[in-house]
Image 1 (spheres, rainbow, N blue to C red):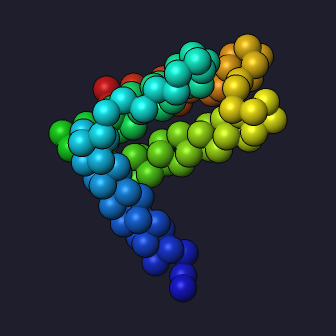
Image 2 (cartoon, rainbow, N blue to C red):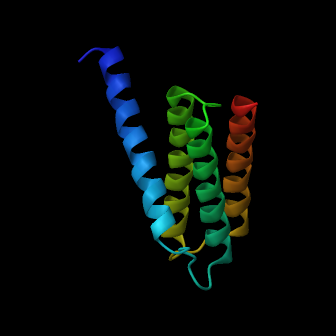
Image 3 (cartoon, one colour):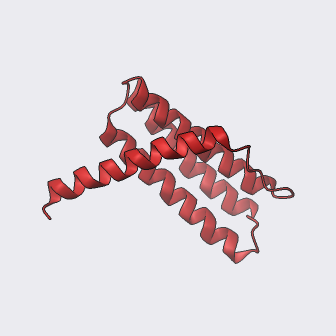
Length: 116
Protein backbone atom coordinates (compact mmCIF):
# COMPACT_ATOMS: atom_id res chain seq x y z
CA UNK A 1 0.00 0.00 0.00
CA UNK A 2 1.49 3.33 -1.00
CA UNK A 3 1.63 6.40 1.23
CA UNK A 4 -1.32 8.15 -0.45
CA UNK A 5 -3.56 5.11 0.00
CA UNK A 6 -2.56 4.87 3.65
CA UNK A 7 -3.40 8.53 4.23
CA UNK A 8 -6.79 8.15 2.53
CA UNK A 9 -7.55 5.06 4.60
CA UNK A 10 -6.44 6.82 7.80
CA UNK A 11 -8.66 9.81 6.95
CA UNK A 12 -11.65 7.55 6.41
CA UNK A 13 -11.08 5.71 9.68
CA UNK A 14 -10.65 8.90 11.67
CA UNK A 15 -13.63 10.53 9.94
CA UNK A 16 -15.81 7.52 10.72
CA UNK A 17 -14.62 7.50 14.32
CA UNK A 18 -15.38 11.21 14.64
CA UNK A 19 -18.90 10.81 13.30
CA UNK A 20 -19.67 7.76 15.44
CA UNK A 21 -18.00 9.36 18.46
CA UNK A 22 -20.12 12.48 18.08
CA UNK A 23 -23.30 10.41 17.83
CA UNK A 24 -22.33 8.40 20.89
CA UNK A 25 -21.37 11.53 22.81
CA UNK A 26 -24.81 13.02 22.21
CA UNK A 27 -26.57 9.84 23.33
CA UNK A 28 -24.43 9.18 26.41
CA UNK A 29 -24.49 11.31 29.56
CA UNK A 30 -21.40 13.10 30.83
CA UNK A 31 -18.82 10.56 31.97
CA UNK A 32 -17.32 12.39 34.92
CA UNK A 33 -15.48 10.18 37.37
CA UNK A 34 -16.56 10.98 40.94
CA UNK A 35 -13.65 12.02 43.15
CA UNK A 36 -11.27 12.65 40.25
CA UNK A 37 -11.51 16.38 39.44
CA UNK A 38 -8.16 16.52 37.61
CA UNK A 39 -9.07 13.57 35.42
CA UNK A 40 -12.50 15.08 34.75
CA UNK A 41 -11.00 18.42 33.74
CA UNK A 42 -8.64 16.84 31.23
CA UNK A 43 -11.38 14.59 29.82
CA UNK A 44 -13.86 17.46 29.52
CA UNK A 45 -11.31 19.58 27.67
CA UNK A 46 -10.58 16.71 25.27
CA UNK A 47 -14.33 16.28 24.67
CA UNK A 48 -14.70 20.01 24.04
CA UNK A 49 -11.83 20.02 21.55
CA UNK A 50 -13.30 17.00 19.76
CA UNK A 51 -16.59 18.86 19.43
CA UNK A 52 -14.78 21.91 18.05
CA UNK A 53 -13.02 19.74 15.46
CA UNK A 54 -16.28 18.04 14.45
CA UNK A 55 -18.04 21.40 14.14
CA UNK A 56 -15.17 22.78 12.07
CA UNK A 57 -15.39 19.92 9.60
CA UNK A 58 -19.19 20.11 9.51
CA UNK A 59 -19.30 23.84 8.74
CA UNK A 60 -16.36 23.73 6.32
CA UNK A 61 -13.84 25.80 8.29
CA UNK A 62 -11.53 22.78 8.62
CA UNK A 63 -10.51 20.10 6.15
CA UNK A 64 -10.51 16.38 6.93
CA UNK A 65 -6.70 16.46 6.86
CA UNK A 66 -6.57 19.22 9.47
CA UNK A 67 -9.15 17.40 11.59
CA UNK A 68 -7.19 14.15 11.38
CA UNK A 69 -4.02 15.90 12.54
CA UNK A 70 -5.82 17.55 15.46
CA UNK A 71 -7.52 14.29 16.44
CA UNK A 72 -4.11 12.60 16.43
CA UNK A 73 -2.83 15.28 18.82
CA UNK A 74 -5.85 14.73 21.09
CA UNK A 75 -5.31 10.97 20.97
CA UNK A 76 -1.69 11.47 22.05
CA UNK A 77 -2.84 13.62 24.98
CA UNK A 78 -5.42 10.98 25.97
CA UNK A 79 -2.78 8.24 25.77
CA UNK A 80 -0.40 10.24 27.98
CA UNK A 81 -3.26 10.81 30.42
CA UNK A 82 -3.93 7.06 30.58
CA UNK A 83 -0.28 6.32 31.26
CA UNK A 84 -0.18 8.94 34.02
CA UNK A 85 -3.39 7.59 35.57
CA UNK A 86 -2.02 4.06 35.55
CA UNK A 87 0.93 5.22 37.65
CA UNK A 88 -1.34 6.56 40.40
CA UNK A 89 -4.36 4.22 40.54
CA UNK A 90 -6.57 6.33 38.27
CA UNK A 91 -5.53 9.74 39.60
CA UNK A 92 -3.42 12.53 38.13
CA UNK A 93 -0.87 14.53 40.06
CA UNK A 94 -0.98 18.31 39.81
CA UNK A 95 2.23 18.29 37.73
CA UNK A 96 0.77 15.73 35.31
CA UNK A 97 -2.43 17.76 35.01
CA UNK A 98 -0.39 20.91 34.29
CA UNK A 99 1.63 19.07 31.63
CA UNK A 100 -1.54 17.75 29.95
CA UNK A 101 -3.20 21.19 30.15
CA UNK A 102 -0.17 22.75 28.47
CA UNK A 103 -0.47 20.24 25.60
CA UNK A 104 -4.21 20.89 25.38
CA UNK A 105 -3.61 24.65 25.26
CA UNK A 106 -1.22 24.22 22.32
CA UNK A 107 -3.72 22.00 20.52
CA UNK A 108 -6.58 24.40 21.25
CA UNK A 109 -4.66 27.34 19.77
CA UNK A 110 -3.83 25.26 16.71
CA UNK A 111 -7.52 24.38 16.21
CA UNK A 112 -8.47 28.05 16.59
CA UNK A 113 -5.91 29.19 14.00
CA UNK A 114 -7.12 26.61 11.50
CA UNK A 115 -10.76 27.63 11.87
CA UNK A 116 -10.14 31.38 11.50
